[in-house]
Amino acid sequence: MDLELMINSFPKLLSAAAITLKLLSVSLIIGLFIGLFFAILRINKNIFISKFAYGYSYVFRGTPLLVQIFIIYFGLGQIEYLRSTVLWVILKEPYWCAIIAFALNTGAYTSEILRSAFQTIKPGIIEAGKSLGISNKVIFFKVQIPMAIRQSLPAYGNEIILMMKGTSLASTVTIMDLTGVAKYIISTTFKPIEVFIVAGGIYLFMTFIIHNVIKFLEKKYIY
Amino acid sequence: MEILAFGDTGWGDELFYATLMTIAVSITAMFIGFLFALIFTPLKLSKNKFLNFIANSYTTIIRGVPELLVIYLFFFGGTGALMFVASIFGYNEYIEINAFITGAFAIGIISGAYSTEVFRGAIQSIDKGQFEAANVLGLNKFRKFIKIILPQTLRLAIPNLSNVWQITLKDTSLISVTGLVEIMRQSYIAAGSTRDPLFFYSFAAVLYLLLTFVSMKFINRLEARYSKGY
Image 1 (cartoon, helix red, strand yellow):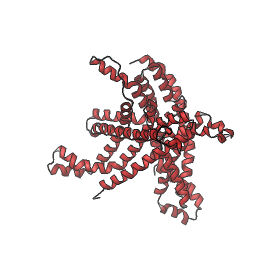
Image 2 (cartoon, one colour):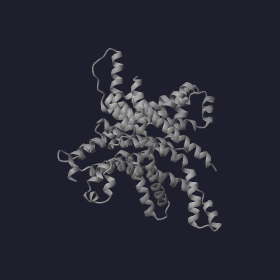
Image 3 (cartoon, chains in turn blue, red):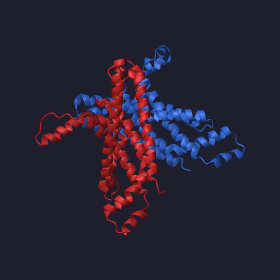
Image 4 (cartoon, chains in turn green, red):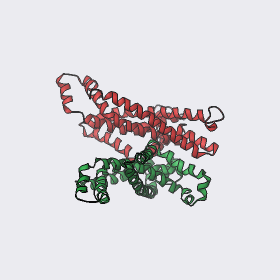
């Protein structure tokens, strides 16, 4: 056991963890909007719209995240037309490609979580709102969305942890996140176990924090 | 479609064998995962605090650390660990572990942590009366497990195991970093030599979708079979 290496690599890995957290939070925020958007499409009565939303979530949940990142990072750059548009400013950066892939991926899972949350709201509650003369829009924003958020908290907490692990794939497109730096240190020192303990420990700590924050929120918004 | 032709002119046969490799690694990993679950589920359910601690550490660490990091540990550490063990027995030559075995083992350990949780949940949700009834009938431990507990566990576990299978199948794409030629690696090679990454990665996505689609159909039939009588 090389303790010195563990102590020396700790600050490097910790600053890389900041990049992991940045990737995670930006993609979660964008993913939440995508998820909400597609969840609303899913519960739409128009069969084409709901099928379209189902197709989106099916494709993104049925393929590995690695493929999605590679299509966006290596694949999209191949389209000549895209290179001439403003979008290219974003798409040539591995950082933004990773975030787009993560956001679309977590958006697909989030849409499923929110959809099932919307569907578990008892029709009686919405009817009660209607009979009080409240408009559909107000019912949606003041009743359905808050209830769906509370309902989906435990599942969404799992999704956050899965996404945090997913951000490790950013290292495959040259981003030096926690896993990227860990791999770099391993391949230069050939001490995989020591590095794994430190990097894994940081990941576990982040999992622990996320888990407890979600638990706290669940207790707070209990009904 | 020329690009996907079988033979020397296209990538059809290469991608076909790569798909078979993905299936083979996934099944092997799932099987290794079951072996781990077989060891750790009883530890999780045991009344001994120390055994609980071991099993909980296993599932917590594996489920809290990225798959890629676990794969790097095995990829870089596997050879070293094996050579260390071999040196105890007096063997000091260089040993190289096959990429298939390293990959299947790494994914298997991950898949095992999820399977352990699924089996634990399934066994815990079996009605207590079933255990008592088996005891009353005077069945011994082995027969009680095989005839009473296992069939009910399987029925409850299949829907969640199908999720584990999906996770395992998708995780195998990560072992492409170790050089094993499965779908992802083959697409990477093809994309590099034809300079057409968009096509090959999209095609890889289609292959994965096909695999998940077919396996879901199969699992649904299995589920219907095990739910007979309910």
